[in-house]
Image 1: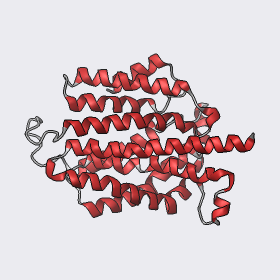
Image 2: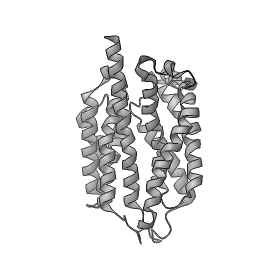
Image 3: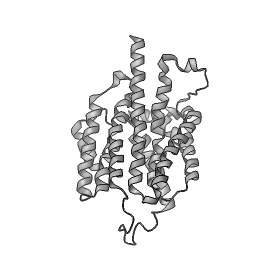
Image 4: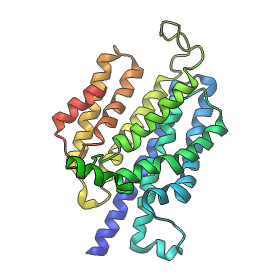
Length: 288
């Protein structure tokens, strides 16, 4: 029974890793839909290259910083327990690689290709693992300090802060540094040119991300015994709330409508294992 359980845990996490890997196609098409036609190929190649660089950086540096685990033993040792430790790395890598994907969307059309890949290696190998290790592995005594000071550790079940906010903070700094896309806004802040080049691609990217998100959230339990229907329904309700909130706020603008569900899903990640579905609906609506 222990062997079967371990094999099921490995399959469970592997399926989650594959679903989150598919989300990177969503990042790609979401960005492709929002840039000008001449930059669509660049956006597609950039996301794929970012993921590849992220894998190398996280495998050799980042995962060791976050969890103190390396992969230099013989293959037979690494494959013990159905290779669960390797699959767990794969799953967490897909989270780490979301950081440069988030940043990429923020600075679309105003960053050179090679320097961005260098930044990706640094972010995934050195910056993100520090936050990840603090919250999810108890590094540097951060969680112990919070528990001693406030009676509870920091709660982030699936990465609202560890993944999405960290990526957003880095993207914000990059946007402030690089400014807005040239010619996109008038002096009074209105969009003046190059609106989204492809609404269908934007919509496709959003749908791929939303579907993969259920692997992102539900599989964050990392053990099949921890699977939770509550997490799934909370994710659903936040997605729906985000869509409706953005639909109202954006006055039927498709860019708002298709980013709304993503906003809701980002917001619910942290507490999706303990919130009530009605609370998730409210959180998603506010986020949207």
